[in-house]
Amino acid sequence: MKKILGTVLTGVLAVGLLAGCGGGSGAADDGAVTLEFFQFKSEAVSTYDKLIEKFEEENPGIKIEQNHVPESDTVILSRLSQGDVPEIVATNGNSVYGELARGGAFVDFTDDEHVERIIPAYIDMINQLSDNGQTNALPHSANANTVLYNKTKFEQLGLEIPTTWDEYMEVVETIEAAGETPFYSAYGEAWTALPPFNALASNLHGDDFFEKRHAEETTFAERYPEVAEKMLTMMEYTDNDVFGTNYNQANTAFANGESVMYMMGVWAISQIQNANPDIEIGAFALPASNNAEENRLVSGVDTLLTISSQAKHPEEAMKFVSFLLEEENVQFYIDEQKLFSAVENVFQEDPTVVDLQVHFEEGTITSFADHYYFPGMQVENLIQEFLINKDIEQFLQTMDNEWDKVQARQ
Image (cartoon, rainbow, N blue to C red; front, side):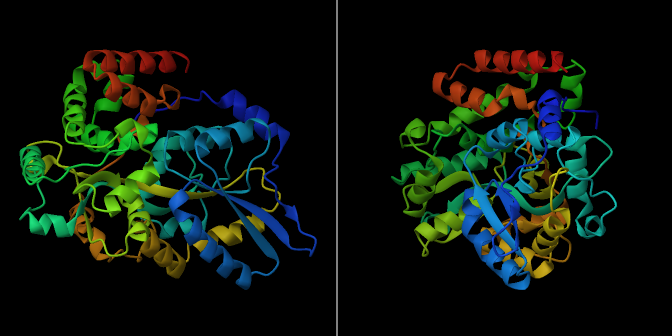
């Protein structure tokens, strides 16, 4: 793959890295080393708390302070510009990671023994993002971008998992005819529009889209009309205050049976089950086209583990990263979070996501489209604005203009 992302953050990185690593890490009063663990997943806070407790029992000389904040990409970029880089980072495998890696923010794991334990496809994914000849993080878990559905309601309505777009629309119309709500959507937070958008774009824009767009041989206006049209179609079957609802509210609403389906990733399952332990959830890949054989599950690296290149305690930081990558700890994490392992020989067998296993076995998987847009485009905000004004032509023109604007600065 040609280089997809530029180095728009080089100046910021240089300033931050020259300033050194802050991160709130140091020696505690009892002589123990205290390390900040900066992680981006709100759903995983309690799971990490349990793992941290276990780690500290096994390593009494090291204390881990978990730090989760909303808008983690923005926060870590801001902190980096001030030389305040957390020693240990769990981040998403997205374009911001690629920028940070290319800018020298993270250590090089290329020759680390842990790399050999990671499923090669996930190493390839993150190396394509950084494109600097190094492996600057260790994939820990993988996710799946799905349609979550209420199994009980599906059974009551006699519904089967659809494999084409037309079948999907038939399911939607059957649900609505029965007096139920097909979808619950929460686009009050811009990022929550990305799961359905990714499911459509990754399957419909063509596998050569980013290479061609970089070479100015295609445009969003040419390749994305169907994506935009289907986004609007699905929103027609939502019956809640779409732009006045946030992610947590949507998880709770779906848990309480306010819709039959919910376009969200498997990362939401644990929070939904916490809201309603009795709900029976299933998950399937959104069938974006009418060619069943071409429809794929959107999956990618959910969590990357990495260490600041300016870490004051690299050995202790590596101990914690190694601990999280131990098979029994990976198993514990993916079981609680309903994710998939990026580490070999660790398998997800939860019945909630069992229908997705065929995609991993057959290799019918594709990457998240938004991981390859320029970070400066702020695509989630453009999608949110589009869903509000519903102007397809304007949306696609804006996407092209923003792409060209950022690319011209590279």
